Structure formats: structure tokens, C-alpha cells
Length: 215
Image 1 (tube, rainbow, N blue to C red):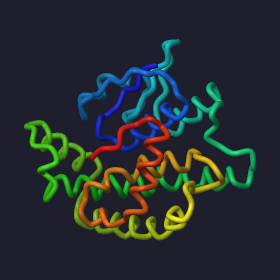
Image 2 (image 1 turned 120 degrees about the vertical axis):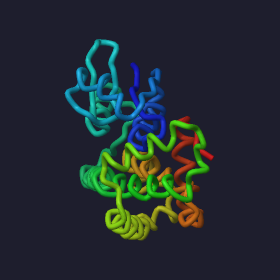
Image 3 (image 1 turned 90 degrees about the vertical axis):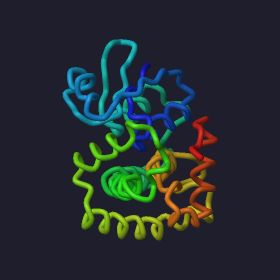
Image 4 (image 1 turned 180 degrees about the vertical axis):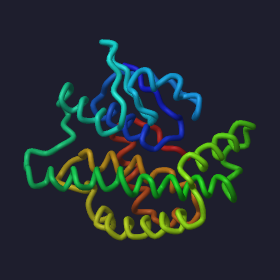
């Protein structure tokens, strides 16, 4: 298998965590935002990353479709639990994190990268990529302010995570992998670095999945 990704994408990180958790061998191909369309649109018809290219020649786009495929084809260790009620919680968390909190993280992270966070990557390509992302997703003042509000609410909702190693149930699940991946970019931003309990949990998920945690 080969994972087509943006190296800094938190949605791509989600799939790397899941692949690592399931101990699956895969290769990575990093693409450049904008130019990635030439590579992935013929494969999936989509414009979003990540894309998982299977050995059969089939390609799967969208992180949700990818984890569903992996769970079906490689059920051990499972991403879900035996209890249907708990699985509903897991799937609700995954959808909320994907569709709201992951997007909010993107807005806040790239707003930071365009200003005080320019030092995170001083290469000549970095400001070009940051500007492309900001233009593509219309990352502007009002949207960033709303994203900060959503993240503040999310950290309140996820606060019970500090009292338990898992978001749902008694072992690592899709909910933990999704939260750990989609919140990771925030640890580079000073205002979120005081949430020690959060980064303890996020690093633990990375460790369980064999994925390096960015410093």
C-alpha cells in the first residue's frame, strides 16, 4: 500500500495512526498542495487528501472511507468496540472531529503559520504553501475567530479524556486516533501548550500507533 499525503496534514496523520495501530506496512508519497490535483484526481475523482493506493491498483480517497476499508479488510486490532452503544459514541466523535474540529484546527494553525509561526518552517516553499491553503479554504479573520471558539468548546467537551486514557471504552479506538491526529497541530501554538493533559494523551496514542510525535 502507498499513502499519498501532505506531510503536514492532520487528516493524513489520522490515517498514519490507524495504519500504525493495525501494524500494516505501507509507503508514503508526499505531494505538493495545488500540484497534488494532477496526481490524485485521476485516481479518485476527488481533490482532497489523503489517498490510499492499494496493491490491487484501486485507490481510496477521504480519511473516513480509508479507515472503513482498513477496518473491514484488517479487523485486528479493531478500531471499534463490541458494544453498539459505545460504537455510536465513537462514530459521533469521529464525525464531529472530522467535520468541525479538524477544520477549526486547520484555520487556527494556518493563521498562526502565516503570522507568528513563520519560524516553524523557514524554507522558501513554506509561505507559498501556507498562502495556497489559506486561499483554498478562505482562512480569514472571522473564520479564524469562529474556529477558536469551536476549539475552546472542543477542549471542554474532551476534558474527561484527562481522567481516562481512552475517550470511549477501555481501549484505544477510532475516536482516540482521530482526536490525537486532528488536534496535533495545536501543540505548536503557544496558547494551547498549557493543556498538558491533552498532549499526554495525544503522545500516548502516537506511541501506541508507532507514529512519531512532532516536536
